[in-house]
Amino acid sequence: MKDTLFRLLKYITARRKGLLIGLMVCVVLAAITSVVSYWFLSSLVDDYITPLITMVDKTPGFQRLALALLGLTAVFLLGAIVTLIQGFAAARLSHDIMYSLRNELFSKMERLPLRYFDTHTRGEVMSVYTNDIDALRLMLSQGLPYLFSAIVTAVAMILALFSLNVPLSLLGLVLLVGVTALSMKVIMSARGHYSAQQERLGNLNSYVEEIMSGQKVVKVFHREETCKEEFQERNASLQKSAYQAVKYTGLISALNMQAGNLIFYLPFAVLCAVCVINGWGGMTIGKTIAFLSLAKTMNVPVVLASGQLYSCVTALAGAKRIFAMIDEEPEEDQGTVTLNGKRPEGRIECKHVDFSYVPGTPVLHDVTLTAEPGQKIAIVGTTGSGKTTITNLLNRFYEIEQGEILIDGISVQQYKKEELRKMIGLVMQDTHMFTGTILDNIRYGNPSLSDEDCKRAAENARASDFIERLPEGYETVLTHDADTLAEGQRQLLNIARAVASDAPVLILDEATSSVDPRTERLIQEGMDHLMEGRTSFVIAHRLSTIKNSDCILVLDHGRILESGNHEELMAKKGAYYKLYTST
Ligand SMILES: Nc1ncnc2c1ncn2[C@@H]1O[C@H](COP(=O)(O)OP(=O)(O)O)[C@@H](O)[C@H]1O
Ligand SMILES: [Mg+2]
Image (cartoon, rainbow, N blue to C red):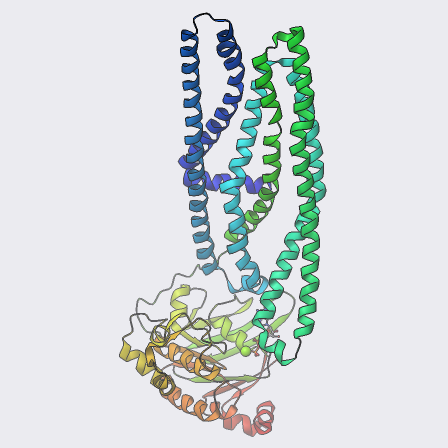
């Protein structure tokens, strides 16, 4: 926690040092002006008002009083102005810092390896962007300035009290420490309820999100009632802890509010009166008024500080998560090889590749394969046999542990990542479109492509038929999940996008699983034409579409069982023969 606070302060001073110092100066000035006005009461009464009573010619006395009040007005004005500036400065500071934190988070997210997202859910990452950033903004714009202001005010008040009367101030100090300790104790015992409240709120929110995105499934299995009950249960437990937390908050504020009156005001009113009457400790009416005004508000800084302390603790926990994400190791790229615009031949070799996502559970064993330039390689095998994993490794989404993968004789690790990924066009089973028109989506990987070329790519991918039937054709605007298209249509667009990127190596990973067999055959024909001169990897369930491949690899539990072309494998009557004849 302390480390996070220091890190945050360092982060702020590195970016907005001037603003931070200005803010602190304003806070100090505002605190001092508020205390000065109370403290000045004693002099106002004793030196300016009381003498007036006995004066014969009152004019000079009134003039002095007017002057003093003028001075006080100036102090009040200064207080008002610095408070105003303080508000602006705090808002500016917090928004500036949030701006640069958000930028840093996003650019980090873009550079994180896929492995990061295997172990962090989308909800977790989103909550850093929304909840944690917002908690931090509150802390920077309110929590920290208030806390700092409370400390400065408390110090100024104590100094002012001591300048009025030392023994009474000592007594006040002891009482203040007592009240503070008591409210701290209450806060500490409320802490559990606060964190329970936070946790249950998160719990409730994620439940709503889960059910909302799964509405269809909920309805299909008519689970509405059960969902409602489950929700009510979570809602009730949130309500319980929230109520407990509020109860404690109420207790603290009641304690503090009444402490001002009961513990400070009443006893000191009596004590001051006794002192004034007996002339003890140079106590005067003026000092009494000032002392009581100060004493009554003596615990206000403590109230303010304890109110902010909790939000600061929450915000710092969030800041810790923010910094943890910023500190996350980015995808490493030590590759130096670039092609300088030269088109690679597309010869791909995997040599004795071993790989596991989670250490200890190997997914690929000793995978060896060679794809000559322009060859079409098919990978078949049951679900979970590691087909997608091979394509992940070609793209260097994950690093291999053993063996090597070479493209044109150069290890994938030696290529600059950008170059490597430009070489490989990947069409995945899950389609993801971006908000924008169909044309924009087709040219996503190749933004300089002309409309004509985009349309040609769509024709090659057999997507043009359905696009042209849309009311707005190629100008149809898609939202990011392209809900308005059928799954198969999204896949066609997906293929068109890969075709448009014009990569020398093409990977189709179950890219046509959701289109009908006829369209799939059409796509395959188009692709076969397109694949001329490109090395391609095709993963498909319908074996008829990969019959004409140059080489078919049969994968089983991460091992290559057989390889060869269709005729060879059929003649062998092995695993491929069984697969082929059973479908
Ligand atoms: N990101 C991941 N983290 C951990 N395990 C994974 C991950 N992706 C896939 N796996 C596991 O690796 C194995 C191979 O998966 P995959 O290559 O996707 O199979 P498929 O042949 O169906 O494409 C499966 O057992 C799967 O559970
Ligand atoms: Mg797969």
